[in-house]
Image (cartoon, rainbow, N blue to C red; front, side):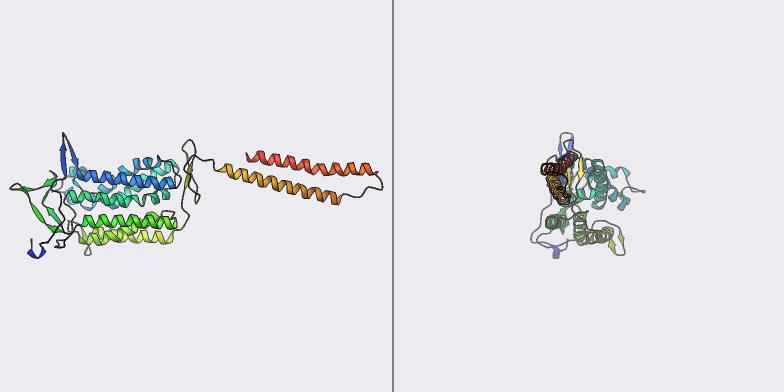
Length: 373
């Protein structure tokens, strides 16, 4: 390595990423991915409950979204790096060895979205609501997953002599540890810790999306669009630092072009789409009902009960007022029959006429109340 790039200090990298526990290998890369999934589900669960969903909803979404997300992430990696898996020097079996690394976030988001959409359709939950509630947990999951690259000594950036440069070893991917020469791990050099840059950027994205969503109650998938746009902005400059093999078009890496295109689409969606924040309620049988813009409900609800009571009171008051007006109107319009009827008879007739609207009001009020029930 050039002496000009010899750093005064460096971030160390692990020399081992796999530990054998009996017949089973414990891989740090897989543990980081699992930890990220757990964190995303925990955060999304809290946000879903705040919008009225029951606690089991996130598990139903994860059962579909996690497998399809992993499949999509692996497919993206294989399609964009086909040389290692196809052709004369390729090994198709390696395409299934996810534990050796190689998951593309773009494919992961697309595949996970397909799984989440299926889950939401089955539960009668607005898909946009699920996406928005995942918009904080997903960048946290990505941040934790990047530590898997640190364990694997992979996806680092250009050589550097900065104090926070990352010391990287020559890596044996099959064995899961650094190559050993004379009993010592063989160093490769000191490079930009792009895994650390992305870790910090993703945590910042999560914080910004959480604050903006809390402040302005984003709906219709806008929180998710904000997350995608912010992540792409950071991924663009981080990707420009990386030196691992990648396809280039017009002088830029493929992932840089993907970042630009996805950023533009996400920003346009965020700026153009408007709408209230989606919420749901659920009954004692766990059936979900979308309630756009309503307040959150944390328990099985009978949301119509208070409204029915208020409506009934309003109806009774309105009917009584109408009856009183009707009674006064009938009394005022009653012709004077004192010349042809004696005083007692006139009073009885007027009393009978006054009672008729009252009885009608009682029937009307009763019918109105029973109709509300």
